[in-house]
Image 1: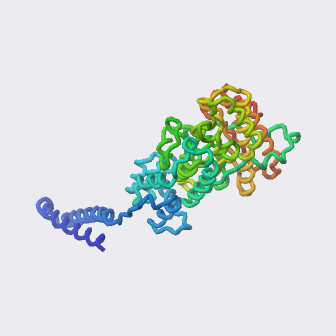
Image 2 (image 1 turned 180 degrees about the horizontal axis):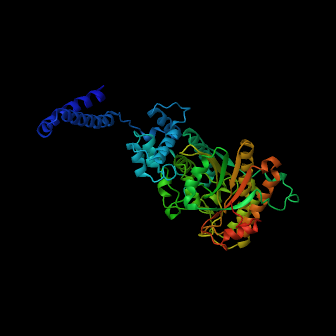
Image 3 (image 1 turned 180 degrees about the vertical axis):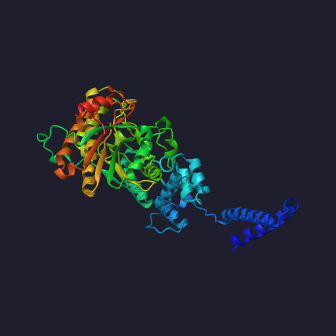
Length: 480
């Protein structure tokens, strides 16, 4: 009641005060009355907004009492949102629509001022403020930090590698489901190749396979736009590290709640793709990357993942001791079907949906190069694993979406400046997986599948990526 009475009283007092001035400067009674009404209305509107802000109850949250699931429930409680409601995603969509429409409301203006592209480049702090004005961004970061204890390969005991890995997977999946920003699963390359007869497929079908010039700078906008296409399903392969993190300066995993902030100057494809869904990006970084997740947890012995003899550093496969390349190659050869790649359906801030798979390749920089043959074998076996898993999941998407076009975006994971993998090894792995995928397609599926191998637009014709695409049996100039 006070919210309504106070503006009325304030408006009346303002009108009385203004009449003293108007009586001395305006001779027309009608004009004087109109001026008084306008002044009173303006003051009343301002007063109402001020009182609404002051009267809103302040919710005090004790971070130590919340885990990630409780955080999602707290979102719902603060705004009286039913647990099964998609209100959080819808709020992001409304903010995005405001930005597109040029809405001049104070909320829209504030969001536009703090983020050039709502949803694509929006930070966790802005996301938290936009979704829950009663929850300070600093409180959200503290909640994440306290409830997602850091368990990286640098801090883990080798004996805890598997248990931390499994707990990290469960926590990340639960958090993403609770926040209603996507669905996470982990894909292993186990079912595609066993049924493949290489004698039956030797040439990639150019009606299905093409190369594509991807503008990395526009990737965020591209993913947001493609997610809205109701007649298409888009599936991207995204380069990252074995812990799924986008590392910050100094090759460090961003702490919980800091993934967006730490990657804001990272203009690579992996970082740009994950920033299209800030809450999902933060949840995975906090619960999985910082929780001990590692794609190779069931492939390598625990002493190669953590501890003083680890061959993985900050999520990168980067051996620094003699003989480790051979050990990793032997492990991948025997247990390559146990590599676990994070794959999620991302519910984008604008309401669209895309699918992303995180993949990793061996690192060239900061690694010892004492056994080139074993190093190349590791490059090939890792590429074989992630391409098989990628195409395997693509077949599942084709099955789940029988009435939509499936557009698949494989990428040259491992050919960048940090990894510098051998193009021949990557091409060999891609070709094997792609031919197996082509063989598995039935005729009616082939007409609604398009594979676009993404080549960065800045690559030159003699780059590693161009050479790799040619070796794989595709024409770099045959672009869609």
